[in-house]
Every structure is written in C-alpha cells, then in structure tokens.
Image 1: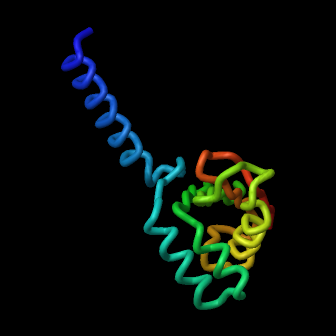
Image 2: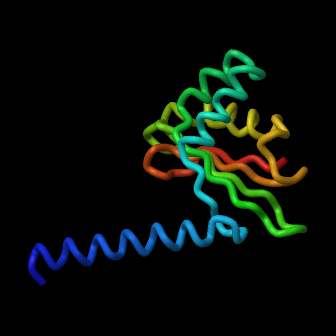
Image 3: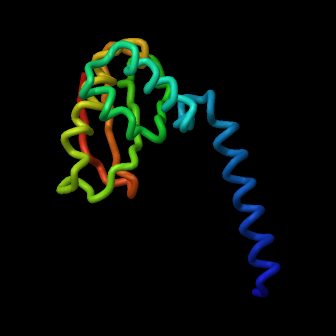
Length: 130
C-alpha cells in the first residue's frame, strides 16, 4: 500500500473513531470530557482544597467520567503529567488528587464510586473507592 493510500485509511479510521465516541457519549459508555473537565476540577480544588491538593491538582491534564447506569458504580479516570509510574514522584500527589476527587461531591455521579489517577504514560498511580 502506498503512502497516500495509507494516509487515507488512517484518516478514515480516525473519523470513524471520533464518530463512535460522539455517538456513545450519552449512552453510559465512557464520555470523554478531557481538558475541559480537568480545568473545572482544578478550579474547584483551587477554591476549596488544601494547599497540597492545589499543588497536586495542577498536574491534572484530563478527566474522563462515565455516566453509569442506575445501580452501577461511578468510575472516573484522572490523567496527569507525572512521569515514572508508581516508583516516580507522582504517587504521593496522585493520592492527594484521588482524595480531593472523592471528597468533593460536585464531581461525583453517585455516592459510591472509584477514581483512578494515571501518569502521562497511562500507568496507574492511585485508585480510591468512595
């Protein structure tokens, strides 16, 4: 397959993925909020959090939340710019981020759920159940 044909195939797949994410956004599947939700979460913590929480939350890059069906557990993924995985410097701040999320009810769909914090490579740094 030539370079132009491969680019055309990649573009078509990319458009298909965007369409699927858009179509599923209201269906209870993962609705990608990204940096917009991250900005709102940061603003909330900056207004109501401790100094340590504000510092930790400054590293948040994206927040992905699903709208769970009735009776299911709320689940949120928080992505950060930390590097190095669990042995890196992001583990302590990740715990503060998950605690801040679990504490501030405005960010939860339900009274019980789980928040997981990831580093920039997608490695899990912390998970908290609330």
